[in-house]
Structures are given as C-alpha cells and as structure tokens.
Length: 415
Image (cartoon, rainbow, N blue to C red; front, side):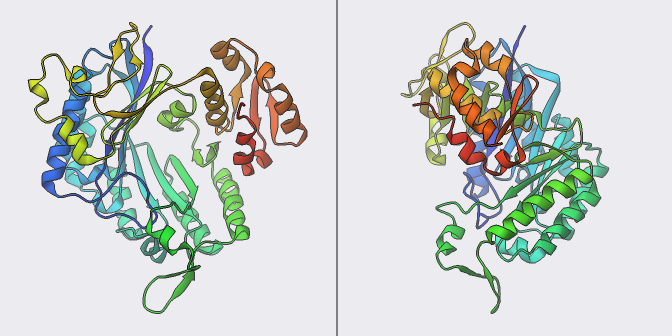
C-alpha cells in the first residue's frame, strides 16, 4: 500500500505587500516571475522517481498570490506535477486567490489543472479596515469575484478573515462575519491579527496609534476585552450558522474540513516546492532557500548536470525515500533530523490544535509507549485545571484550554 504525501507549492509573488504580512512574498516584474516559474518546474522535475512509493492526496498552491499568474502558467505547473507524482483521483487541490487578481478567463485553466478548492483572502467586509491592512481590494470586488468563482462550478470555497484589525469594532466585525455567512462558503478561517516583527505594523506598534487617512487616527491594536468579544462571537455565530469548529481557527460545513491542513496537524509526510517551502519527509524537516536569486541560480543550467537534480550543488541532506535511498534536496538550506523527543512534542502541539484532539492509540502506535508513561502527571494536572478532557480514546482541549492553548502546549515540552 502506498503512503500518503502532501504537496505545497509556493508562489512568492503579490501585487503589493500588505502592511501586516510577514510571509515570504513580494511584488516582482515579469522577468523574475518567468525565471522563477522555470526554476520551479525544474525543481518539480528533479523529484522524478524519488517518491514512487507515495500517492499525493492533497496539493496546496499558496503564496503570495498564486492567482497573480496567468491561467496558462498555473496549468503548466500542474502538468509538471502530474508528470512526476502519482496524484490521487480524489485529491483535494487548493489554490489561494485574492479578490483583485481573479480573472474569469483564467478559471477555465484552474479547472483543467484539477483545482477543486479555492481559498479567498477577504480579511474584512469593511473597506476602511481593508485599507488599514494594505489590501488592494474592496468588499464589492470580493463579492463579485466570489460569485464568478461559484458560478464557474467551484463547490468548495474557503474565506479567510482577520479580527483585531486596528480601528475594528465589535459591530464592524459582526457585519463581516454576517456578510460572509450569507454567501455560504464551505469553509471559514478566522484568525486574530498578530503583529509580526519586520512588518510595517511592527514599526508602528510603539506609537500606539495608526494614521488611516487624512486626519483620522485609530488605535493600533484592539483591547484584550474586544479581542475576547470577537473570539466568542466567532464561535457562537459560526456554530449557529452550521459551521463546525474543527481546529483553533478553522470552521467548516460538515465534510469540508481542509484535508491539507489536517495533514499538517497529523504530521503526514509533505513536500514543499519553491522558494522557502518547508517539508517533512520520514522524520526529517527541511526548508528551501529563501533568497529568490539563490533559488533561481540553483536551477540555471540544471540540464547540464551529469546525473540528476540531487547530485548537483553542495547542499547535503538527511532525507531518505521508502527504499532507504538517500535524497539530497538541491534547494534545501535548513535540514533537521527529528529526535524522538522532537516528534513526541510535535505530536502533542500539532494534534491538540484539532478540536477532536489526539488519540492515545495513535501515540502508542507511533512511539511504542503509552502517553501516560510520558505525560501522565502533566495530563492529570491539566485535567484537574479543566484545560484538557478525555473523550473516549481522545485527549482534547476544553474551551478554557483552547483559550489558553499556548500555555497548555508549553506543558508538553520535554526536558
């Protein structure tokens, strides 16, 4: 039986950088985009015969803004993937899009490429809040292109939302949620704004106020009380509307949970392709180079190499295929072979993000010992504090535990 593999393909381009964004993305001219895509295709080709014992169950095309590429280019990427990898006939295949970059003439190519799930970055239904974030679309533009995507036959759509936007009120947030619910997407991801170092938002943080336009000033971050109100409203209104919370920040209609993200939390093998993309293959994590010039340079003249992609270059690795054959990822510059301690900690941190939690049986199967042998005292204390609970074979966070998830996760660090 073939093992499962997930693919993540990174498109690092966007129209402009949002003020809160710390993702590996930036605007680029057509020349850089073309060179990057050729390098990406060469990286994909280099995996020929490396994953013959795996079947790809999910593919996620993320960014950046993948929809900034032409439909023909998207199709080229997927043609390369289907040539090299065994992709399941019922694979979940997601592409991220921004409302301002949707072109109806491209959608036919998305469908030809096999894309069957669209994730739209709305963030807010309030145009002023979108301007604060540095987004290039407005709500009407989202609404128009959401309907274009729906009317072209897509039956699995996610909408991304952000709470805690500078100047956001509980009423404006309620309006955003209510407006999105009316559109009935199958999935909603609702995240609290995190101000990340290195972003324009971080630079403004110490000023305690953010100029929006003209002489209007709004607070940079919302109060803890307002953040709590938004958090509680999200849970209640989405639940009442038929969206089941299955992870800390993710809600879906039953049967439309994001299989790709669940794979991350379940620590399924996944391969990251493209600039800065991360992978987990057989207890080894690695990350591709994050400098675009270096990434492109690694694949220039690759056809002149004597053997194949992985025998060229100086990067050494510790990644093994199912035949225990050493694979040296050409674009990797961060490689970590996980210890059993690392794996156990990851099992807990990632698994407890899911509302259903983690399985005692799965823990025993993966690590050859019971979870109580490793975390018995910790689990008793967290149970007494009403932060975790038992549900059959599963251990999961309580509502209080979800609220204090970072504290709970810290208790599973092993000395």
